[in-house]
Image (cartoon, rainbow, N blue to C red; front, side):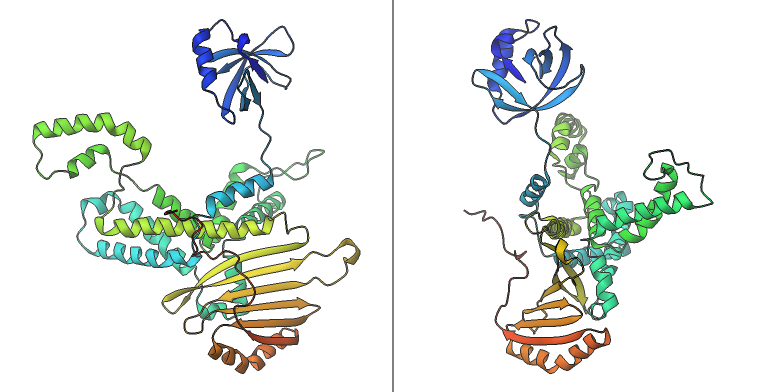
Length: 452
């Protein structure tokens, strides 16, 4: 779509239109509304901001349609291009730019959440203040959500069992969206075949039966609640949404807090000022939350840590759709926070499956599980386990000599555990040193230096 300057429509002031066009910069995104198709086939009348312009266009359009366009050239004529749809690579790159600076270790949200929950319980037992009374429903919801979130974290003893580890992996947040999609798919099938529901008529060409939205939504809501209460990512999303939507003080309330003694004249002045500034303060979101002063610092820290944990989980999910590796190897990365008595620790897992070639579809697939953990007093421990044809090969790396000896003393027990599930141990090696890179980017390492 090209808009030469001499084609500016006379329905607007040419000087104002030219001035507006001169301010448009290359790379800017604009919205153009098609007003009229001119007699010339390739010319249309469009509305660009406050200006009505004649444009040469070779794209399909309809009168009244609003087009999102990208400014490509502004030197002697204005050229507008329809942006290409975002590719998967573009989506991944955009997500990485947003999430990398925010990521934190997933388990870092637990201490501020535990502290905030303790403070809420103390406030509930003390005399009710005006601030806590104003947000009583939100505090109750935050308390319930915090308990659900903490209860969803497994303990060390739970992770020691195969079923407990499987459940922790399923509820780590990495598989939330596929699980919800599977729930919807299963419910559609169940509702379509249920004799209690309304009959579903399949029309020619229908791939799947259509379900009443109300019945499907009701069934999905009931099932989704059970999943979201135990899934880490789902609980983090609900927590962040609750914290971000927390009630905020109005400008009038802010003004009232600035003084303990308010006269009638002062009240009128403050009301006038608050009326003038209300729109600006709401737009800039400067109003502080209605929350007890004792909770304010813990509240802000929890938002930061929860958003960082959600960013880390999402980054782990992106590794499974990385186009550079998905062609030859499917990979999943996940971090599982767990309770070791009253302390929170994390175990980082990378699960990889080599993709079989077409010529070797009958061959046994190779699975590799890499584990990284840092238990107290034991130091850094890494392990890489490979499974092929029901045979196990495993390597351990430890930085602490005492830990290396401890693992060596329990190798017989490990081999016995493999044997119980019909896995043959080919070799197990215990090595010193840092070992391979399992967690590519440490969450505690800052991507940017603010002082640079």
